[in-house]
Length: 205
Length: 205
DNA sequence: AACGTACTTGACCGACGGTCCAGTTGTCCA
DNA sequence: TGGACAACTGGACCGTCGGTCAAGTACGTT
Image (cartoon, rainbow over the protein chains, first blue to last red):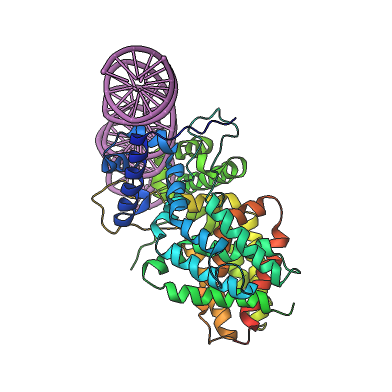
């Protein structure tokens, strides 16, 4: 029924070029001063192409983030323990937090860009086409949150796992923490996150 | 020595009008679609006046936030326990977190606006005049973080109080949590924050 | 009343995110 | 091989926004 037409070769090439260029710029400049025109220029394509492929600034950032987080998603779903299935929940949670800190640490710029891309609604007559309303809505965050809250609930079904997961993950979006990461303090962050998570799981109510 | 010239009457009146207008708009619209021109119009002044008084969008938001958080600052510094001095650290921390959730809950829009105002560097030839580089830098956050981390350190000097405080407070800046607050779930958030904080303080390492 | 200065104003500027459509190019089928 | 169609492309263009500035206004002081 649903004809999934293959992507044209030039389109695929351009998409990769755009993604690469964005990566590059993100690595070299502050995210809020990277314009879509710059991205297009760096990728060697027209601005229209960028928007045709990714819809908006937010779309581009989300696509990039998704690419970056793919390996982790795989490892969690079907890799070896303790990240993958098989280990007890608390060990999986600790391993997962470590892994997330790693991903975030290697992509702080992108994370910041994600958060900064909430500039929507260019046309006032829009209604609900929000699509990407905020940094907490993209698929990557969804997966991270789902997994985290499931692991918490597995150990402590009496607690509000959903909210605790938001608290745990929310810290990774905060400016001061991002700045720490930029200074190479990832291990310090991972340690404190472990302490926090352990406190959640072990507290005897 | 330092002649503190009093603010002119019309200037003071205008500043209050601008602050009030911003409050108003913030209560009625999504923060990212409030422009400085709108603020000026709603306050009944010219756009130039707004910038003359507050320097930038960020400056305006910070000023407003400072006003809102002033009462809490007072209560902590010299109010009655458990918020003020006198109670044991863990009780003070719990009370403080409750109070912050309350303030944030009544100012979610402002918080979001704070986070969204990171659009800086209009002049490329700037160097370090950043002034307000991010949401984590304004005096209100500084105070919140300082107090929180001091209370943590008082109870658990062996832990990384600074970072744990960032984790605790960072959750209040995350989109999903802000959205929860918007749905009136402040008590739920307060409860989970208490659980998290308790876990930090009581974990026997 | 007169004066200096702080304050006010809105036209103006450069930049940005996003749109549009005329022109191009890959792909598929005969 | 060729032709036709849809998908893709580029960049001029649009509306808006944050912020600036120079000229005018009015407060407070003496």
